[in-house]
Length: 225
Image (cartoon, rainbow, N blue to C red):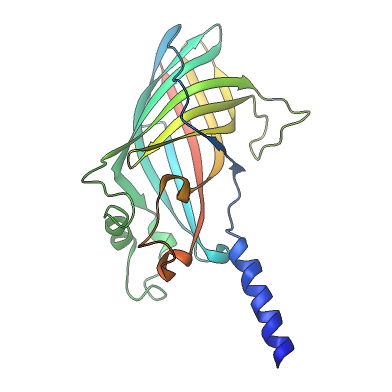
């Protein structure tokens, strides 16, 4: 019996360490100087763009996923992104109904989760209605030393991501395509919500412990002249 308890305890630790996230792990650091806007300005086409998110319970179980809306601009010079600024509407958070089974969630629906995410337990949208991402640098992606879940990644984008008033610099691989009239950016990366103080309840609260700290973000941004 004692041996079985030890095995069970080890299994719990392993599951707890596996958040289920499958994006590129974003590199994080302190807030950096925002890049200077140079060249032509492209405006984000909100109808052709999307921001997708996915969160997990510990062990990667019962993922919840959905979308957010944003607007912004991208600056381009010599076929390269030089700067960019994006405002994310936190009131637009929308959970995909297929990710919440009321039979398993005590009758709660995706709409219930939307409402909860907007409260002070998470994003506190009344006080912080928008989040912001401002590009601080764009470097070439070196396939010889860098890895990415994005096929044919071209660049590593760094920027200040501000959520609930806290700013953290994040860097992630992306596939960037620039034409005369359009810029597209595709990326899938994973952040740690605790870097922005996003916790459910107080520190050590069992409710928060049951939620993985890792959150996947998937960007499909199209900006046009």
